[in-house]
Image 1: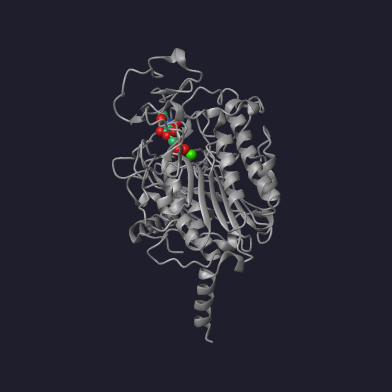
Image 2 (image 1 turned 135 degrees about the vertical axis):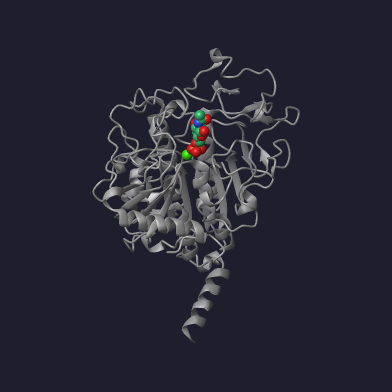
Length: 505
Ligand code: NG6
Ligand code: CA
């Protein structure tokens, strides 16, 4: 048999064979934290708090030091993670309001639909923030469709957007959980719906006050972004959210323990509003943000414990990462700033969430699969946008050139079999940056140098910026003037990646 025929045959066999025929194919659990920074884990150098469960994962697995979220905010990162396309290529992929329509077209290949096609049971639990429903937004009181199940997930239990945005309810598959039809939900991101109290007019009703924005409808003593009425029986309690999501994630694992499964577990922690369960309050010296990180670590521990209990650990690929870098004051007076002490949420990196500097997209990135992944530390340049191509290689699924065109097969790097990652990576914040090896080029941009609300160093500059991260990880010395040739070449490459509409390797 010639080689090509054999390869085709093998691909076919793998693609159609039932799960039991592929003992080495792992379950996949993607734990996606929200706003967890590069320096927030003790295994990444934090000293002001300990994250034993995440550390345990790192110790038994591979810890990446140059792993990236595709963007410095949530929606574009999640869009790229699931679609394999850089979000900046597509309009309407910025931070979405809570009533936005689904931004990934049903029928399009996604990380979930690819794995589903490969025979995996697929599920998403946690923060969604990619929109729901058709153009014009979802029908909260009826059939919420399209939803995650229309883009590859067999099961979904989500919040539509973020904890600080209405509607503050859970959605399971196509329905708001616990909705009383006699008390329908209304949502507005324009005018107020009625005269109900708001954070702006009724600060006396708040248990947590906004520092900027977040002064509209009050739910559970916390004012949010957007207006909402009705749905009283369905409203979530922020204090219980980590328990609710974690329990749903564990149940999903239990229900599918006898088949290959893919769980996308998107915790809301440590995003604002940071209202951890009372059992985590005061667990760190850092106030709500530190305590919410402890809660994140607890959620990770519960997932790992479930895998152990069900004897799934050795053949489960666990990936732990974050949707963007760290932010301290993201809109509520929760003492995160006052109690930060010496803790550096972005570790040695400059900037954080929203920033063009490395703190925007370089995030914790840990991979464990005892059967296959080499233990240790990897400096390979890798991005979450690569998971689609890498995991399709792992499960012998073919991608056409029209699919996942920015996703590169980084399976060898992911499994620790190669120290080599991407040759180049586009980082998305208010401007675009290009990483090539240890060099970083930031496009000229006119935005503010510092975001006054969050106090983030944004990395905006009308001049071109070039940093050599090998000698200047903290991006303190712009060497563009010293290396005009390199600037020219990197600028041209970024232009080419934009124009050709795909990332060539
Ligand atoms: C910003 C919010 C911030 C956070 C962010 C989204 C204000 C003033 N700030 O617009 O609090 O919600 O959006 O965060 O409203 S993300 O992690 O989902 O991208
Ligand atoms: Ca986020």
